[in-house]
Each structure stands twice: as structure tokens, then as C-alpha cells.
Length: 344
Image 1 (cartoon, rainbow, N blue to C red):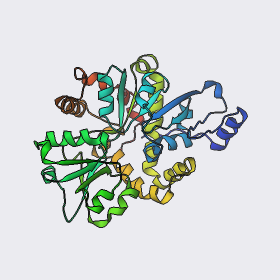
Image 2: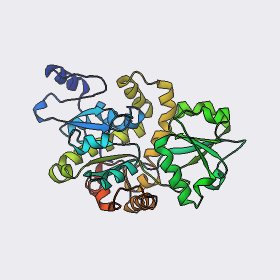
Image 3: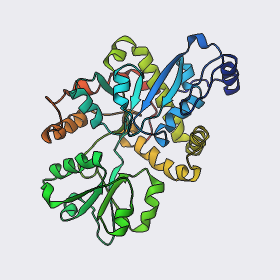
Image 4: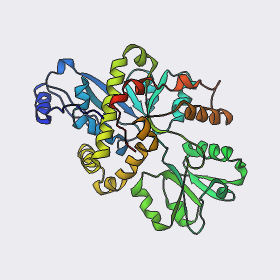
């Protein structure tokens, strides 16, 4: 992996001060002293800011965006924010959302957005049970009660369909992200992200995991996406954004504790100890055998097509299923291949 000379952080900050730059709320901007060449890009998240943007913050801190002539502005998402619509409308230049199917569904609804990289190589969504009544493989769900949130119900339906299990063989309890239904006996299984180490700690050493990926539903998490217009009219900006992000995640791989320190300095509401406990898992989902061979952010047309097929089978698209080449492109990854860290 090539490395470029880092900008001096003190000079960078002095330049920001001279130009009246400001840090406001959850928005993070960083500019060079020669700011006339800087273009501010908004990264629209589909979630509240947390360890999913360790790489972006590291890239910001180390001046990787500035080296591309860019300033980063992180816009937090959440349950009441339609991040995909924000990017599609041009209010943000790039977005990252929790799960790849959101982009397939958006495309089927006519939104001109396209995935350019996969942040997590495997989705961390997991079904958690306890040793006294374990679920280790899909067939173990038969006769069980699964507590999951409303938006994740389709994931359970996809899992059951992929494994030939009738839906009436599993009882679904729609709840939030709380682990307590498993501890109180209300449910045999609860769901959540395996990277949420703090929330999972209450389950203790008796916890049993079955990941969505291992159960046959192979979604990507934290996919990055832009509009067709950006790809066609501003290809160098798109490449610059993804180069900076890729380098940032490579830095996180090499400096996980320092990356956590950057995160909690930007977002003081986060707990450093909890983030230190989680960062190893985040790195493992970002880098695996696929990235060792093909580099950070890699993804395949075949896996995207498999996702489209299962969602089409479940009748999730309002109209016809989108074409895989309308949902994703490998072109940007190929064009910045030399700058994508090869770890796994």
C-alpha cells in the first residue's frame, strides 16, 4: 500500500482558524490553509455517529481528505433521517447506510443511487441465544420465539426462506434492540449487531451466536453510495472521497487504539472503554480474506445479485427487481486499487 506525506496537523488547524472554519455539533470540517482549492463534501450516515466511521475520522485527522482537495462534513443519521433521499437529492455527496438491501430497494423505487464500496465485508447482524436453549444453525429456530426490531423482520423472513423453513414455525416478537427479552425468558432469541459489544455484555459467557451471514443471507454492511450524476459528472471527486476513506480504514487497522481516541474526542458522549472493546470486531468486519486478496471495500456482483434475488422472491420490490449494474459498480474500486489497503 502506498503512503503519501501527511499534512502537518498544526498548520492545518492554523489555516482553519485564519479562514474562520468552525466545528459545529456532529459536523466535522477540516481545511487546508490554501482553502480556495478545497471542496466540502457531506458524508450522510444512516445511523448516529459511532465506530462505523472510525476510518473517516482517521482520514480527517490525518489529512487524507485535505490531500484530495476535500473537506469532510459528517452528517449523522438516525431513525427519523432518510439518508438515501438526502444523497439522491444532492444534499450530500456520499452516503453510508447500515445494510445493502436499502440501496436495492431505493433503486427499485427510482432513486438514482449506486453502491461504490462495501465497508463491512460481512453483515454483523446476529441472532443471539443462550446455551440452555441454543440456536446454532437455522433449523434450531423452529419452535422458537425471536425478538427483533420491526425493520429487521424482513431479514428473518429472508433467512427462513433461504433455509426452507415455513414462517409459521417461528414466533416473532417485535421489540427494540434491548437484550432483556432473552434474559427474562420472553424470547429464545434476540437480534443485534455483533459489533455492539457493550450491549451484548449483559448476556455473559453463555451467549450463543448465529450470524445472518452464516445462516445464508450474505448482506454487506456500511456500503458507500453516490448518485449516478456524481459518477458521471464528478468522477475524480468520487475517487478522491473513496481514496481518503480507504486510507483512513487502513490506518485504523494499524492503529486501533489511536483511532478510538480520535472517535471519542470528536464524540465525547461515547465511552472509550466500550469502544476499545468493540474496535477489534469492527476491524475484523472491515478486513478479511476477501480484502487480503482484493483490497478494502471489495464486493462482488454475484453477491449483490443473490441479495436482489432473495428480496425479489420475498416480494420486497414495488416494481421489477433492479438490475445489479444499476445497484452497484466496481469501477471506482478498480480505479483506486493502488490506494486500497490489502489486509485480512
